[in-house]
Image 1 (spheres, rainbow, N blue to C red):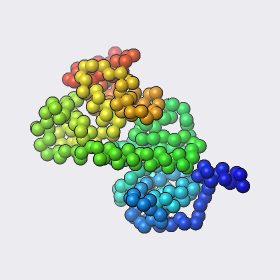
Image 2: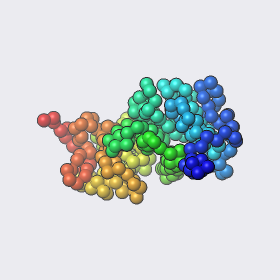
Image 3: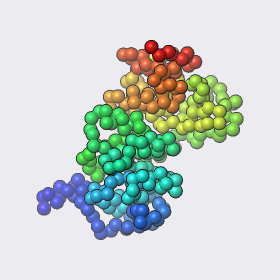
Image 4: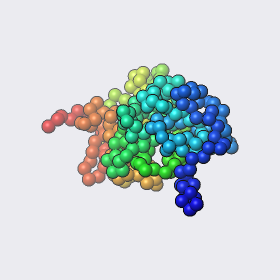
Length: 294
């Protein structure tokens, strides 16, 4: 009885009663993501997540737990089916399992991030070293959890990402229309970063008719750097600007800089605009000359 209670407290039981199977969609049950739910959270819309998680007891326990709390789930039986499923209807978030044999979760993570800059992505992996977390974040994941992880912790992190996305959506206006945007920009509303115009208010990069929406961390980082051109900004200051008081990995700022360079630099390996100041942090250098390889 004691062991059973411990499992219940950790959220690791396998509840059966009260689960509406219509809230869990599989390949053999291609119901839309808007299928009726069994127990929606009062006053909140259901959270729709795409689960690319290997079959097994852990996946079933997670599905049972989320379904009983009103989450709408789309569960894949074939990992590579994530792309056509995403084309059918965009979920509120995606959970990727790097331990699924034959599935390149990092590649899928990068592809998902290229499709949608704001889509919450949680990556599950086997390694718990700092480099494992850094690689996951650099690949576009918003969060990374190493096995073994608890169901309650995973669910809490998924909820936190949804709250963060909702808060960012309320705080940020919609990206401005593409037509005629470049001609009307001023130094007050936008900053030139190489061939791009950067609008901090909408987190947008624009080059001609091409528009990109930066993730929240990268946008905050670029806004902080472009506000002080030619002035080195310390890593600690950038960490506070990007993450506030949230606990982050020591190299979180460096990982965000690498992602930002891939977005704005002609050659991320030889950065022109976001340059490193050794022992200090980083500096924005507008109109910098192209460095040469040595």
